[in-house]
Image: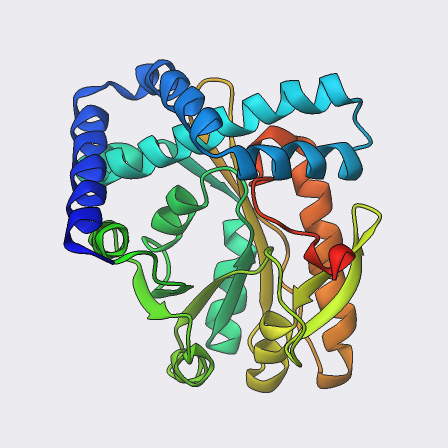
Length: 287
Protein backbone atom coordinates (compact mmCIF):
# COMPACT_ATOMS: atom_id res chain seq x y z
CA UNK A 1 0.00 0.00 0.00
CA UNK A 2 1.33 3.42 -0.94
CA UNK A 3 1.81 6.11 1.69
CA UNK A 4 -0.94 8.24 0.16
CA UNK A 5 -3.53 5.51 0.31
CA UNK A 6 -2.44 4.51 3.81
CA UNK A 7 -2.83 8.09 5.03
CA UNK A 8 -6.21 8.51 3.32
CA UNK A 9 -7.54 5.27 4.79
CA UNK A 10 -6.20 6.09 8.24
CA UNK A 11 -7.70 9.58 8.10
CA UNK A 12 -11.11 8.22 7.06
CA UNK A 13 -11.21 5.65 9.85
CA UNK A 14 -10.09 8.14 12.50
CA UNK A 15 -12.74 10.60 11.26
CA UNK A 16 -15.44 7.94 11.50
CA UNK A 17 -14.22 7.02 14.97
CA UNK A 18 -14.52 10.66 15.99
CA UNK A 19 -18.07 10.79 14.63
CA UNK A 20 -18.96 7.55 16.42
CA UNK A 21 -17.48 8.85 19.68
CA UNK A 22 -19.52 12.05 19.52
CA UNK A 23 -22.79 10.29 18.62
CA UNK A 24 -25.03 8.72 21.29
CA UNK A 25 -25.68 5.02 20.74
CA UNK A 26 -29.35 5.65 20.02
CA UNK A 27 -28.48 8.03 17.18
CA UNK A 28 -25.94 5.82 15.42
CA UNK A 29 -28.55 4.46 12.95
CA UNK A 30 -29.19 8.02 11.73
CA UNK A 31 -25.47 8.55 11.18
CA UNK A 32 -25.19 5.16 9.49
CA UNK A 33 -27.84 6.05 6.88
CA UNK A 34 -25.73 8.49 4.81
CA UNK A 35 -22.68 6.25 5.24
CA UNK A 36 -24.72 3.34 3.88
CA UNK A 37 -25.76 5.40 0.85
CA UNK A 38 -22.13 6.32 0.24
CA UNK A 39 -21.11 2.65 0.37
CA UNK A 40 -24.00 1.75 -1.95
CA UNK A 41 -22.73 4.05 -4.69
CA UNK A 42 -19.02 3.54 -4.03
CA UNK A 43 -19.15 -0.28 -4.16
CA UNK A 44 -21.10 -1.26 -7.31
CA UNK A 45 -19.58 -4.76 -7.40
CA UNK A 46 -20.59 -5.47 -3.80
CA UNK A 47 -24.01 -3.99 -4.49
CA UNK A 48 -24.54 -6.35 -7.43
CA UNK A 49 -23.28 -9.37 -5.43
CA UNK A 50 -25.65 -8.52 -2.57
CA UNK A 51 -28.71 -8.27 -4.80
CA UNK A 52 -27.78 -11.48 -6.66
CA UNK A 53 -27.15 -13.40 -3.43
CA UNK A 54 -30.46 -12.31 -1.94
CA UNK A 55 -32.38 -13.08 -5.11
CA UNK A 56 -31.10 -16.65 -5.33
CA UNK A 57 -30.83 -17.54 -1.64
CA UNK A 58 -34.11 -16.11 -0.39
CA UNK A 59 -36.02 -16.47 -3.69
CA UNK A 60 -36.76 -12.73 -3.64
CA UNK A 61 -38.28 -10.78 -6.45
CA UNK A 62 -35.87 -8.22 -7.95
CA UNK A 63 -37.65 -5.35 -6.18
CA UNK A 64 -37.68 -7.14 -2.82
CA UNK A 65 -34.02 -8.09 -3.18
CA UNK A 66 -33.12 -4.47 -3.94
CA UNK A 67 -35.05 -3.21 -0.93
CA UNK A 68 -33.43 -5.77 1.36
CA UNK A 69 -29.98 -5.00 -0.09
CA UNK A 70 -30.34 -1.38 1.04
CA UNK A 71 -31.05 -2.67 4.56
CA UNK A 72 -27.95 -4.85 4.38
CA UNK A 73 -25.79 -1.83 3.56
CA UNK A 74 -27.42 0.08 6.42
CA UNK A 75 -26.56 -2.82 8.72
CA UNK A 76 -22.94 -2.93 7.53
CA UNK A 77 -22.53 0.82 8.09
CA UNK A 78 -24.12 0.62 11.53
CA UNK A 79 -21.97 -2.37 12.49
CA UNK A 80 -18.83 -0.44 11.58
CA UNK A 81 -19.91 2.59 13.62
CA UNK A 82 -20.83 0.44 16.62
CA UNK A 83 -17.42 -1.22 16.43
CA UNK A 84 -15.60 2.10 16.26
CA UNK A 85 -17.68 3.47 19.13
CA UNK A 86 -16.77 0.39 21.16
CA UNK A 87 -13.17 1.50 20.74
CA UNK A 88 -13.95 4.78 22.50
CA UNK A 89 -16.60 3.59 24.99
CA UNK A 90 -16.01 -0.13 25.62
CA UNK A 91 -18.02 -0.43 28.83
CA UNK A 92 -21.05 1.21 27.23
CA UNK A 93 -20.77 -1.25 24.32
CA UNK A 94 -20.51 -4.27 26.59
CA UNK A 95 -23.58 -3.22 28.57
CA UNK A 96 -25.61 -3.29 25.35
CA UNK A 97 -25.04 -7.02 24.77
CA UNK A 98 -27.03 -9.71 26.60
CA UNK A 99 -25.96 -13.35 26.34
CA UNK A 100 -28.38 -16.25 26.08
CA UNK A 101 -27.24 -19.85 26.63
CA UNK A 102 -23.99 -18.89 28.37
CA UNK A 103 -24.34 -21.29 31.30
CA UNK A 104 -24.04 -24.45 29.20
CA UNK A 105 -21.00 -23.11 27.36
CA UNK A 106 -19.30 -22.24 30.65
CA UNK A 107 -20.04 -25.68 32.08
CA UNK A 108 -18.62 -27.34 28.96
CA UNK A 109 -15.45 -25.24 29.15
CA UNK A 110 -14.93 -26.09 32.81
CA UNK A 111 -15.60 -29.79 32.24
CA UNK A 112 -13.47 -30.30 29.12
CA UNK A 113 -10.89 -27.60 29.74
CA UNK A 114 -11.18 -25.98 26.30
CA UNK A 115 -13.88 -24.64 23.98
CA UNK A 116 -14.45 -23.57 20.38
CA UNK A 117 -16.95 -20.82 19.60
CA UNK A 118 -17.91 -20.72 15.92
CA UNK A 119 -19.99 -17.97 14.39
CA UNK A 120 -20.58 -15.98 11.22
CA UNK A 121 -20.77 -12.36 10.05
CA UNK A 122 -24.23 -11.99 11.55
CA UNK A 123 -25.47 -9.14 13.71
CA UNK A 124 -22.53 -7.33 15.26
CA UNK A 125 -20.10 -10.21 15.65
CA UNK A 126 -17.50 -7.79 17.01
CA UNK A 127 -19.67 -6.83 19.98
CA UNK A 128 -20.43 -10.52 20.52
CA UNK A 129 -16.71 -11.33 20.61
CA UNK A 130 -16.07 -8.46 23.03
CA UNK A 131 -18.80 -9.66 25.39
CA UNK A 132 -17.58 -13.26 25.29
CA UNK A 133 -14.04 -12.08 26.01
CA UNK A 134 -15.30 -10.85 29.39
CA UNK A 135 -16.28 -14.42 30.24
CA UNK A 136 -13.65 -16.57 28.53
CA UNK A 137 -9.91 -16.25 27.75
CA UNK A 138 -10.84 -15.74 24.11
CA UNK A 139 -8.53 -15.91 21.10
CA UNK A 140 -10.01 -14.96 17.75
CA UNK A 141 -8.63 -15.91 14.35
CA UNK A 142 -8.69 -12.98 11.93
CA UNK A 143 -7.39 -12.16 8.48
CA UNK A 144 -5.27 -8.99 8.49
CA UNK A 145 -6.86 -6.17 6.54
CA UNK A 146 -5.00 -3.34 4.85
CA UNK A 147 -2.31 -2.00 7.24
CA UNK A 148 -4.14 1.18 8.26
CA UNK A 149 -7.45 -0.55 8.97
CA UNK A 150 -5.85 -3.58 10.57
CA UNK A 151 -3.90 -1.51 13.09
CA UNK A 152 -7.10 0.09 14.38
CA UNK A 153 -9.22 -3.06 14.20
CA UNK A 154 -6.69 -5.11 16.12
CA UNK A 155 -6.24 -2.38 18.72
CA UNK A 156 -9.99 -2.19 19.39
CA UNK A 157 -10.33 -5.95 19.64
CA UNK A 158 -7.44 -6.22 22.07
CA UNK A 159 -8.69 -3.25 24.12
CA UNK A 160 -11.86 -5.19 24.98
CA UNK A 161 -10.04 -8.39 25.88
CA UNK A 162 -9.90 -10.35 22.63
CA UNK A 163 -6.52 -11.81 21.72
CA UNK A 164 -5.86 -12.08 18.00
CA UNK A 165 -4.30 -14.85 15.92
CA UNK A 166 -3.28 -14.17 12.32
CA UNK A 167 -5.44 -16.34 10.06
CA UNK A 168 -2.48 -17.27 7.89
CA UNK A 169 -0.68 -20.17 9.55
CA UNK A 170 -3.08 -20.08 12.48
CA UNK A 171 -3.88 -23.81 12.85
CA UNK A 172 -0.78 -24.61 14.92
CA UNK A 173 -1.38 -21.61 17.18
CA UNK A 174 -5.05 -22.52 17.50
CA UNK A 175 -4.10 -25.99 18.71
CA UNK A 176 -1.83 -24.43 21.30
CA UNK A 177 -4.63 -22.16 22.52
CA UNK A 178 -6.93 -25.12 23.03
CA UNK A 179 -4.28 -27.31 24.66
CA UNK A 180 -3.58 -24.49 27.13
CA UNK A 181 -7.22 -24.69 28.19
CA UNK A 182 -8.31 -21.45 26.55
CA UNK A 183 -11.14 -20.61 24.16
CA UNK A 184 -10.96 -20.19 20.39
CA UNK A 185 -13.35 -18.02 18.38
CA UNK A 186 -13.80 -18.64 14.65
CA UNK A 187 -15.72 -16.86 11.90
CA UNK A 188 -16.49 -19.70 9.50
CA UNK A 189 -19.24 -18.53 7.17
CA UNK A 190 -17.29 -17.23 4.18
CA UNK A 191 -16.16 -18.94 0.98
CA UNK A 192 -13.62 -21.64 1.92
CA UNK A 193 -11.91 -22.10 -1.42
CA UNK A 194 -11.25 -25.48 -2.98
CA UNK A 195 -8.48 -26.87 -0.75
CA UNK A 196 -8.48 -29.89 1.52
CA UNK A 197 -9.80 -27.80 4.43
CA UNK A 198 -13.08 -27.19 2.58
CA UNK A 199 -16.24 -29.19 2.04
CA UNK A 200 -19.06 -28.48 -0.42
CA UNK A 201 -22.51 -28.24 1.14
CA UNK A 202 -25.89 -26.91 0.03
CA UNK A 203 -26.34 -23.45 1.52
CA UNK A 204 -29.71 -21.84 0.91
CA UNK A 205 -30.21 -24.39 -1.85
CA UNK A 206 -26.96 -23.80 -3.76
CA UNK A 207 -23.56 -25.49 -3.43
CA UNK A 208 -21.08 -23.53 -1.33
CA UNK A 209 -17.76 -24.35 0.30
CA UNK A 210 -17.40 -24.39 4.08
CA UNK A 211 -14.34 -24.65 6.28
CA UNK A 212 -13.98 -27.97 8.08
CA UNK A 213 -11.49 -26.33 10.45
CA UNK A 214 -13.83 -25.76 13.45
CA UNK A 215 -15.00 -29.38 13.44
CA UNK A 216 -11.48 -30.72 12.79
CA UNK A 217 -10.05 -28.76 15.71
CA UNK A 218 -12.90 -29.94 17.93
CA UNK A 219 -12.29 -33.57 16.94
CA UNK A 220 -8.52 -33.42 17.39
CA UNK A 221 -8.52 -31.62 20.74
CA UNK A 222 -11.74 -32.84 22.34
CA UNK A 223 -12.97 -29.26 22.65
CA UNK A 224 -16.77 -28.85 22.69
CA UNK A 225 -18.04 -26.89 19.70
CA UNK A 226 -20.54 -24.08 20.29
CA UNK A 227 -22.39 -22.23 17.55
CA UNK A 228 -23.15 -18.64 18.55
CA UNK A 229 -24.45 -15.54 16.84
CA UNK A 230 -25.53 -11.96 17.50
CA UNK A 231 -28.80 -10.21 16.70
CA UNK A 232 -29.35 -6.47 16.87
CA UNK A 233 -32.72 -5.87 18.51
CA UNK A 234 -35.18 -3.11 17.55
CA UNK A 235 -34.16 -1.02 20.58
CA UNK A 236 -30.52 -1.03 19.44
CA UNK A 237 -29.26 -3.48 22.04
CA UNK A 238 -27.83 -6.88 21.11
CA UNK A 239 -28.64 -10.47 21.97
CA UNK A 240 -25.83 -13.00 21.75
CA UNK A 241 -27.16 -16.54 21.42
CA UNK A 242 -25.05 -19.60 22.30
CA UNK A 243 -26.44 -23.00 21.28
CA UNK A 244 -25.78 -26.10 23.40
CA UNK A 245 -22.23 -27.47 23.02
CA UNK A 246 -21.57 -30.58 20.98
CA UNK A 247 -18.63 -32.98 20.90
CA UNK A 248 -17.16 -34.05 17.56
CA UNK A 249 -15.33 -37.25 16.70
CA UNK A 250 -13.00 -37.54 13.70
CA UNK A 251 -15.56 -39.45 11.64
CA UNK A 252 -18.19 -36.80 12.41
CA UNK A 253 -16.33 -33.81 10.95
CA UNK A 254 -18.44 -33.61 7.74
CA UNK A 255 -21.68 -33.98 9.73
CA UNK A 256 -20.57 -31.35 12.26
CA UNK A 257 -19.69 -28.93 9.45
CA UNK A 258 -23.13 -29.46 7.92
CA UNK A 259 -24.68 -28.90 11.36
CA UNK A 260 -22.94 -25.51 11.48
CA UNK A 261 -24.23 -24.74 7.98
CA UNK A 262 -27.85 -25.49 8.97
CA UNK A 263 -27.62 -23.52 12.22
CA UNK A 264 -26.19 -20.59 10.29
CA UNK A 265 -29.06 -20.70 7.80
CA UNK A 266 -31.63 -20.67 10.59
CA UNK A 267 -29.91 -17.79 12.37
CA UNK A 268 -29.69 -15.73 9.17
CA UNK A 269 -33.38 -16.24 8.41
CA UNK A 270 -34.31 -14.65 11.75
CA UNK A 271 -32.86 -11.31 10.61
CA UNK A 272 -31.72 -11.66 6.98
CA UNK A 273 -30.74 -8.01 6.68
CA UNK A 274 -28.10 -8.55 9.40
CA UNK A 275 -25.87 -10.97 7.49
CA UNK A 276 -23.02 -9.92 5.18
CA UNK A 277 -24.58 -10.70 1.82
CA UNK A 278 -21.90 -8.46 0.26
CA UNK A 279 -19.49 -11.40 0.39
CA UNK A 280 -19.15 -13.44 -2.82
CA UNK A 281 -20.33 -16.55 -1.00
CA UNK A 282 -21.30 -18.80 -3.89
CA UNK A 283 -18.14 -18.55 -6.01
CA UNK A 284 -18.19 -22.29 -6.61
CA UNK A 285 -21.26 -21.88 -8.84
CA UNK A 286 -19.23 -19.81 -11.31
CA UNK A 287 -16.06 -21.93 -11.34
